[in-house]
Image: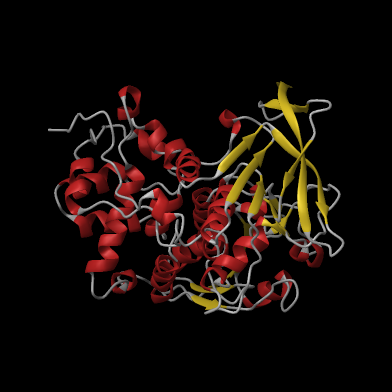
Length: 467
C-alpha cells in the first residue's frame, strides 16, 4: 500500500546560521527509516513516466521499490546499471525539472523524492559494501579496441565508464591535476563533497579506465594524434572559459570570474587557507553578478569565507532566476541578499587599483526576447552606487578554443561549441564524438552525462561496424 502523504519527507540538513560558516555538506541525507517511508510514496506506475525525464534512463520505480523493501544494495545495483555517478547525481541533478517533474504524485502534491532516494542508495553502498567497486568487473569482455576520452568531467566520465563496461580499453586525458571537471573545480564542498567524487571515479578506475592528468589536449597532443593511438575519441572538455560583462573597471583588483573564484576554493582548497597556500581576497561587501547555480555557489562560498554582506545582482526578476529553487532557498536562508531587477554599469576603484564601489542601474521587464523571457530594460536615471570590495562575475562560460584551433576538420558553431549529430554525438570527423557543455554550452551535470551515454552507444556501434 502506497503512502499517500502529499509532501516529501523532509531532508535533514544543517541549520542555516551554522552551515553558512562552514563548508560541510548542507543536506545530511535520509536515514534508512526516512528513505523507506519516502519510497512508500511511489505508486510504481505501470508506464514509468519519471523515466522519460531521466537522461541516463535509470529504472526509477525499480530501485525505489527495492528501497521500500529494505533491499538497499539491490537498489544501488539497479541505479549503477545505467548511471556511472549515482552519488553525484543524487546531490546535484535538477530532478525537479526532469524525473520528478513527470512524477504522478506531483499532480496533487510533491513528487516522490527521487534524487534523495538515489543519493541514499549510493551512500549506503559506499558506506556498507567493503569491496566497493569490485562488482564493476563482473561480466566484462575485452574487445581489444581502445578509446580516448578528452576531459574527466561528467560527460567524459560517463562515456568512459560505459565504454569500459562494454569491454573497451579506455584512457581519459584530463588537463587539470585532479579528475572530475566541474564536479571537482566548480561545485562547492557543501553541495558535493570531493570525497564522493573521488569514490565515484575510483569505481571507474576499477573498471579499468586509466586517467592521465595534466594532459592538455590541443597542446601536448592533438585530436588527430589521439586518433592515431585510439580507435575512437570522445571530447567532453566542457565550457570553462568565463564571460565578462564588458563594463568599465572589470580589470580592478577584487574582480573575479566565478570560474576562477570557485576553482581556487574547490580545486585549490582556498577554504582551508593557510593549510593550503591558496589565498582568496574577500572583502566585507561582495557582489555576485548572475542568477544561475554558479552564482549561488559563488555567493554562498563568499559568505562562508567571512563576507558580511553578499549580494546577488540579477537583471531579471525572481521568476526568471535560472538557479534551482533549492539553491535559491538555501541561499536566502544563509543570509544572501537578492538585488533583483538590477544590473551593473561600472566598477569603481581607488588609486591602488582595488574595487571600492559597484555602480548599478535598476531594470524593468519589457517584451519577451528570443528565449521567451521578458527582456530586462534599464530605467533611465535610476543609477546608484554600492560600497563593494569584491565583485564575482557569474554570467556564463564558453568553450576553450584550444581544441577547435588545433583540429582543422572539426566543425564548430559561431559561439565555439562543437557541432555534432544529435542522435549519435558524432562530429564532422569520423570516429570522433563530443558531448556535454562543449556541444550545448553551459548546462547541467546530468545532461552532460546523458550525452556521454548516447556517444558511448554510438561509438560501440561504429566500432563494431568496422570489424
